[in-house]
Length: 321
Image (tube, rainbow, N blue to C red; front, side, top):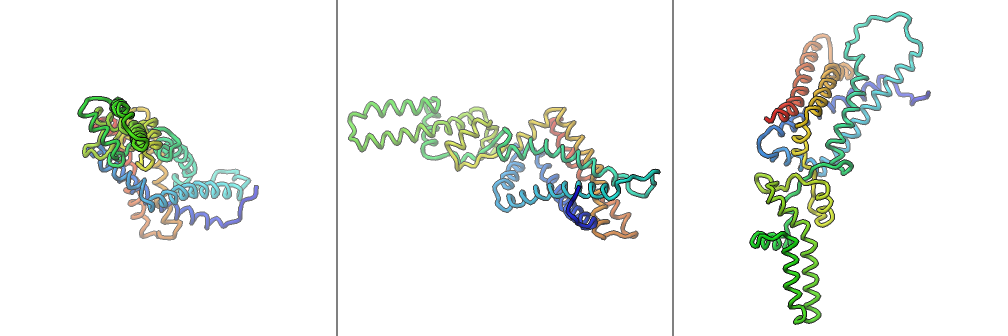
């Protein structure tokens, strides 16, 4: 088996640099997740997700992050394979070395983390790109135009459904069609067609108000399903419908088996980070015998903060807090 000839030290440096970047990202991700615990109907968390999903700089960073994760995985596997190939014949007698126990588990915990990340992407990122169905939200302001507002206003006054409102208007206009000239009839037909096209959007807004699926500030329509998302994509392509990650998260963490699965994921993360943090400093040559105890202590503090910060969200959400 022939692999590109790159020095092992070079590969380790790349792994360390990429790993250091991911360590910083984990801290950022954990902090954002804590917004879920605010009792504000998801205002903070939804605003954060909206910013992350619409800002073009963030989109570039997102692609860089996915590339970094893929690079980290590939480099780690490549390093493990090349190290194995460099010693095809194993020692006849097991050697006792001072290698940190976590070092020997890194490749295995990394593989488990990769498997868990695929599940995590299915739950969240793949929903965002439309590969997996989920729950969605959209800004009320972007759904309202002249036709939608007129339908909703008349619907509120008459108590009729949006579709019935348009049918009533259509019937009334038809009564006067014979009194109109061709130009007026064409204008009437165009107006009715606009109202018909606005009915699906008006129904979604009307149902949201009836079922109280609006955010507390009435800025967002929440809890939209995939069918409603498809309607909005067709009838209001510029509305910017996006995943409702706050609702998705709280819904998923309401199931015990999902909470247990995520806690298992964080246990794996714990063992991986316990070695990853100090190994970054060691590989980059930033440690020495004076600072090693401090680096080890900082690594343990960082790992506990990250793991507990992530784990507290599913636990408290499941408990209804």
